[in-house]
Length: 60
Image (cartoon, rainbow, N blue to C red; front, top):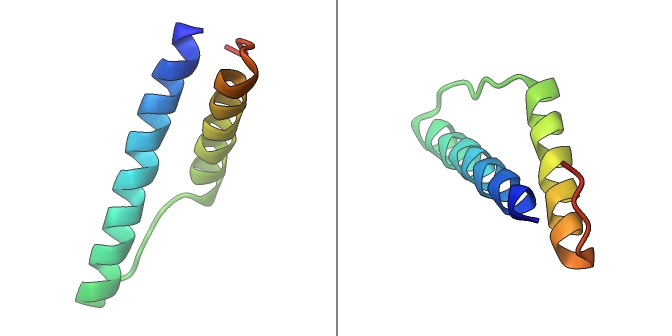
């Protein structure tokens, strides 16, 4: 189950960084650029790891 925590940690850091950059870009008035496929993949990994921690199953 340690892998779920590791995946949750890294995906949380990525999503938090993306959110902070979005807020910064909005404040400065610059274009917020990201790759939607990568962001979607990270969100799915985040949800899988969170679900795995809640139910106690290892997905990775």
